[in-house]
Image (cartoon, rainbow, N blue to C red):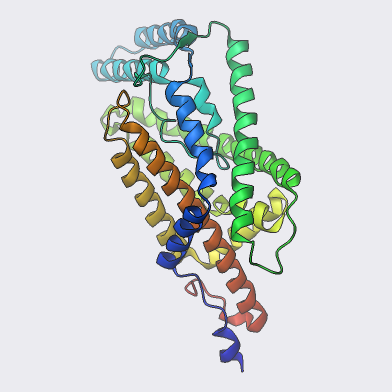
Amino acid sequence: MLQEKETRLRPPRIIQTLVQGFNLIAAHPYIMLFPLFLDLFLWFGPFYRIKELFSPALDEMMQTLSASLTSSDVASTMEVARTTWEQLLTNFNLMTSLRTYPIGIPSLLASKGYTANPIGNPLLVELGSSSDASLLMILCVILGLMLGGIYYALISRLVLKNQENGKSMNIFYSVGQTFVLFFLIILTVILLAFPMLCFLSSFSVLIPSMGTLPLLILGVILMWILLPFVFSPHGIFTRQLSAFKAISLSTKFVRVSSMATTFFLTLVVSLSYGLDLLWSTPEPDSWLYFLGIIGHAFVSSGILAASFIYFRDGTNWMEEIVKLNPQNMTRNNL
């Protein structure tokens, strides 16, 4: 009897889940409008930069460090750091704050710098006030979280449309919990990254030959720590959970399905990154780039829909197995 019940609900099949996600977006193409419009705005909209605001402080800091450190190896490292920061300030657009994490609208152009578009160069606006820059960034983050919450809510509603026991969605509650989740993750990153960054930076100064290895180590550590958060947004939108309960459910699900979830995330990240390289093949000043924006909108929306399907089926299967026989819950079930 137990075996018959267990066969009713199967763990999610990763390839089939991806196909279902893409089919869902193909049947409801209006979902693609969110990433499409965001990329069009970043492509043709104004470019708000803070280079002139922070360059004097950067130059002063570099001169102070160069005066106190006389080693030639350290000096070359500082010069590389100066060049890197100058490039970041040159290509950083405050409007990319509309692309928020972990809940936000995916964008192909969020990581692009100041480039020409098919009708010319975008309007370049240098912000000379730190208060103006902070206010603009805060407004962009708030708007990005709100639009991202609506984007997630629409996808989750499509995923749960045929699920009889699904709760009615309160979009205002879900969007509110996205803000709570956002600040919890920011707080976690700050508390963990700052001491790690200070510790690893000391190694970079003492042992310059390490290069970018400390940053890679820091990234791996943060990825390992933040992995349990990955399905927290899904719990908020599919089950109307609070941010804390969504994190708890996500942590339990990732722990139980660690092998399958790692494979699923590796597959979707590789697929997304690889196709982004393909979409970015045309130059941004060519109209062919618009085809890449459309392709990115479809693929990113399909992958997000697939993640909701994976979470829905995986958590349903997990809870059903627990009800039938809690001893069957092992790390290799999924």
